[in-house]
Image (cartoon, rainbow, N blue to C red; front, side, top):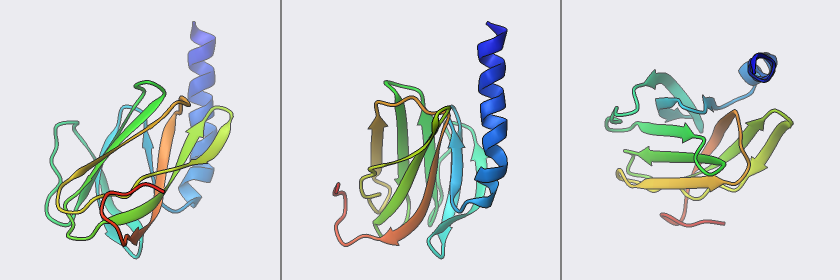
Length: 134
């Protein structure tokens, strides 16, 4: 039992230096973060309690290990955004499809069958359609 847990902790720690150099926000499973979007990247990010609410101009994101990896994200911005999502797993990182982040406090729910340690979100760009998936 100790070896699998130790291996998991080492995998997360090994990914930390590379993750720190990459743009975006790394949200580990079980975490909730609030941030603003500046120049297309998460800015002024802070870890928050799961029940926290995002203020005007902020985004809140939560990642859980439900049915693989599940991410909920809600934006209190007047603009919808497209963004990149990257699953960070023990066997490496993989780009995944993410739907549009709707504007005005509406939520997007993403679910991927692969179990991940974390999700990196980055490269937010204004979307032409509110609430669409590629």
